[in-house]
Image (cartoon, rainbow, N blue to C red; front, side, top):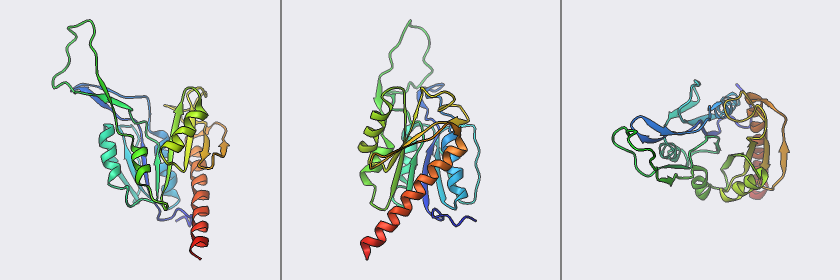
Amino acid sequence: MSTSILRNKKVLITAGPTKEAIDPVRYISNHSSGKMGYAIAEAFLQHGAKVFLVSGPVCITLKHPNLTLVKVNSANEMYLACCRFFQVIDIAVFAAAVADYRPAQIAEQKIKKDDEAFIIKMIKNVDIAYEFGKIKTSQQIAVGFALETNDELQHAVAKLCKKNLDMVVLNSMNDANATFGYDTNKICIIKKNFTQKRFELKSKHEVAEDIINEIKTHVAHKEIFDKVSAA
């Protein structure tokens, strides 16, 4: 077993997409495969952490004695599942591609194609990382993801500040062979002091290790600071 600084740390990870129902047979979702979130969960487990993985619908399996897997569909289900762990975790990694909006009403019966067009009114879903950021203690660490198509750095820094994150993992839809569906990813990690660290295109398992290493460094610095402050 690893003697990593992460050993026995309690880690919450969200992964995969969410599905927002329109009617009993249709839903709104996105192209997230969950590969990145699951790779991060596996990496934490290899470092001896206790992982709570809240997963949207994916075609991936992961088993480990230190893994608690909670499967959900909608954004609201994911939020309620995460709330169960907010008070006890040391680290949160919000890697899921949570739908920003959901239909205001779910049709009880299948919508028939009688009309040439129909309108779906959408309402905003809860922002899970933002809600955690409001109650996060000084002893907890929060890591978010930013998938952008334009003004990547500007949007990532805004998310870092708004959601009280300690670091944000930025990836761009403009990078080839990265993001949704691929086994590779290309990231930039931005920390709370706005320092940036860019990485080359790598397998998602290697990317997970890069993210873990940055979190380990953050944990080590925090523990040193806490000891000095208590002296």
